[in-house]
Image (cartoon, rainbow, N blue to C red; front, top):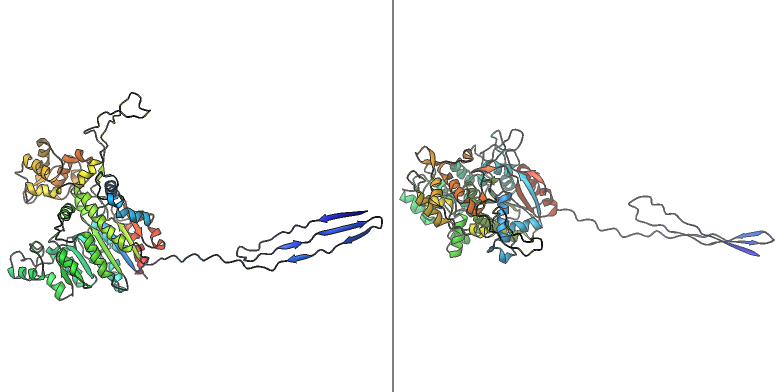
Length: 575
């Protein structure tokens, strides 16, 4: 009799390290034990162990090296564009019954950058333990330009008054092309802070001289001709003839803000090699690599005037978009790359005026320029675009009220029973967005109609009522209109100053602040409130678009000095 026992051997695999790229398999053959009875002879068959030859596993593909540097940086600043201003733009684009974005899937260019890039927030007050709570444009732009804490109203200086090299100046030192574009004045605080160094933002005549003589800025497109012109330009026919021969319209050279006889327009052309442009047609023909475009005596056309000339097809000034496209065309020719700052500066001006209709039109004008940048950069991997604001202006917001509350209506839902739907408050109809867009003039236009010199000592309620009806979709009573020119004080010229029942200390611009009084009498018709005639410290949005290795660092809560440092590191100007 035989007994047959089958033994199975189990092998154990031991892994010696996470980087081991071979495997060993042990196979044990069957062991057969045969016992013969009664001879008691045990026969054990050979046990054979076979080891397979180690096999090389394919290595996983190496992850791509992240792109952490770029050739070009484009910084877009919506001056005064806090999160609530962005909210106004997006509400209009997405939900206004007659939104001009309907043929664009109700999508703003800002939202395209948000969807395809990274979105963060930035604090913007004067930085550091010795700073302040609220910034002005000069300080904020200086911090965005240098990455260094700056003092209020300083241009290109640190808190101790020392000159600090800006990202634009560092880019130029590396051999890159540089440009500044704004729809305000090229010597205004925001563009000035990137290429000038002055103890106060008001030194615009000195800023103008520095901009053209430093050699640091290749392309400058904006308004502000008044500080480039000799002080007697309004009466000196010889100078007027010279400027006219250069192509400058009389509206651009109508007055000067200089205290000397320097003609920086001629100097820019003859001494510093700038090609000149003074209107839309001239700009379109320029092909040189150094360009100074001055398209207005002071600030350029506001957003409402721009919308209306577009509709009439008779714009003579280039738009912010057209200036942006021209700057990109010129700067992109430099094989070493470029730095370009583009400012939508009149968002801030509308905020100071507490003028929501004007502000919406400025946001639309800025977004049009953002769209042009998006189209230029969307298929590139060598460019960083940062879109942000220097600060928020006006403490703007939509708000609900008890004015013109809704009437009761029956709803079909099974939860209503016999009750009618009647909210206690007016939460604002979407049609108000179209009303804001269609405003016919700014609050400054209203003031100009009442008195062009802003001396409202003899103004009447009827004048204010008529001007409001002419330039806005709103109607006010004579009693409401009478509150606009109420005044308890006068300025140095003897002109009445507006009297505010609320936040009077936060309206600091003299007769210009009558705009804030207009805002109060039309507020309930807009569902809009304002908290100030100056700035707030609200964190502002930051949109970053470009290579992931560069842009992801902006998706956080940061400060403007951090934004500057990140941009400079990406451009390699700190190396």
